[in-house]
Amino acid sequence: MNVLIVGNSERPDAADVASRAARWLIAHGHHPVAVAADAAVLRSDDIEIVDSVAGAGELGLVVSVGGDGTMLRAVTLLDGAPVPVLGVNVGLLGYLAEVEPSNLETALSRFFAHNVEIERRLVLDVTARTASGTRRWRSLNEASLEKQHAGQTVRLRLHIDGVPFTTYQADGILVATPTGSTAYSMSARGPVISPGHEAILITPLAPHMLFDRSLVLRSDEAVEVEVVGQRPVGLTVDGQEAVVLQPGDTVSCSASDHPALFVRLESRRFHQTLKAKFGLSDR
Picture: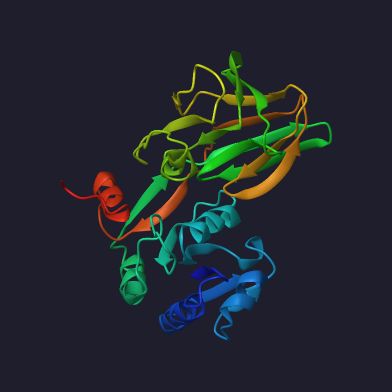
């Protein structure tokens, strides 16, 4: 099986963990590969460098070595391909990447023995339409439309299923998935949604208006945000700057037909994971 290894350049342990993964894979008859940017970070002679994910041939697994940001990048690299991602946590929070480095070999053994669960997570298809053309991205966490300059607000008109809902005067708007509800949206006081739900979350950022609540929509409801007024708006997708929007430009978000797939060693109760990761006590 071809196995893509994705690593985090800011984590000093990532290279050692990736090398362990590569050695285990080779010893068990598999073929570890990495794109050039990751291979330069991981520095392992056991990992073959490929030009792109498409050039890696048919993939059976992605091993993400880092934190939650590395998991996001792994999902982005797959671009909708139905390949499960095994997250090895050498980051800080490790909310998505649940396998600790000490359990790496055990996790790989269980995956190839088909002794794991595959969890599906909703992903957003994000489309920006501007005067210069149309661009598309996939988002596991959120699409964020935000002001470009401090001390100002922007005007963003929200359409749901093609019908105008309201115009927000705010620092911006987040369009998030249930996975993203525990990321940026939560810091903006949005609700926490179990990732098992199929939903789209709209969270305004510091709205300067009486209606300041988040909206939880069905996953089959189409969302479009239009830039109105005179100020530009920056679009960021899963923490990566995407494009600067001008008045009249729009961003559409809809549930993708191609969810993200995560390898889970055990059945997990979402609220218990949330409690553990955020250090919540019983009293």
